Length: 459
Ligand code: SF4
Image (cartoon, rainbow, N blue to C red):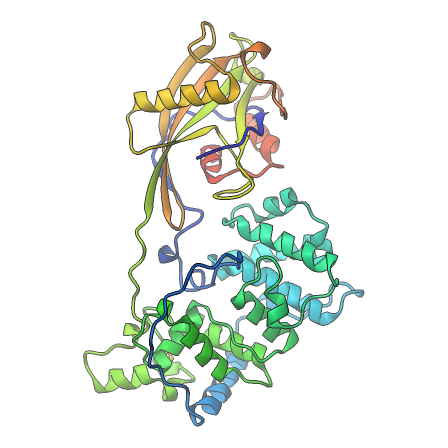
């Protein structure tokens, strides 16, 4: 875990004792989310990995099937769609055309919905739109403001791409690109988001394919191929189904069916509007061994990587005899690099370990890191007041399981004992314990903390 040396000293925090092992899982892997949250494709980072060529034999939808599916699904959607804030047409600024308002609403909601459940997104979406009702408003925001608004949703890269994309559009033509190929040129907009914006806001007859759509199509056609290796086929089939006169409604209907009725483990086939066209259902009725939930086939997930790191909460006392009640304590925080995991977030000094190692090795790694990075020599006489192993914390990312061993180091440092700090935040309110927690929160409310810090912060 490499950290840059952009750091700060933060004011009073609550006592970091009595820590227990917990799993912090704010960026939950796809396997543990509900179907709504696990199915949105990730944003386009313009770096595509090489694809595997697979020879498939998947039949097209027939000319008889297509109109039946369109009519039944749209009718069902108009009667059953959930009322969601991003589905409401609103012109939020008289200087911005209605279609652009809709495109912005679809964009924000689709990015938020990637890896996150609808119920969670609603509040975030409403707060976001209140602060930045149009693309033009968002383009004037800072990264820090956007991260602050995003705090808790995880995958902060999505927020960064939204801001960068907004700036890119506003600095270019000023209006939203109106078709898939132009939308895909915007930072952070991939095939899925482009299809959603183009079809819903600008009525371009293009498909969208997310996990819900894959599931419905796999069942309608009883497709036995691995969906990950047959992505192109699913896009092609979804493209055949899109209703050219109502592409946005049709795409939302297909996703809504997968999200609410044709669910992974308990599909409601008895009330399904397209049950008459569903081959998986037909097969299951004729063959006892076949279940509709056999489709799509389950793909074995890549093994999660296990990483380990030593974290040191460095508490600095200006005066050896000062008491925490007096509020004279400061804490060392470091800003992570702009790119990569948890980009741009603040954290306690951390060292990535080669593997699972014992306490003495972890201490050595921390000492070496503090000396090399900050010129803090914990062995120097009079510096180390106390040192305590205070607990472990596991942070689960999609592909990484990071175990953090946390130590609390209380140090007495004078100016010459460490490198000059480029950024200093010091809060020294003489306060009681409950307010001390409040002080810690207010001290750090305007910066973006990573989940490890939030874990300590919530103790
Ligand atoms: S009939 Fe059942 S399996 Fe087929 S699409 Fe409808 S809900 Fe899904």
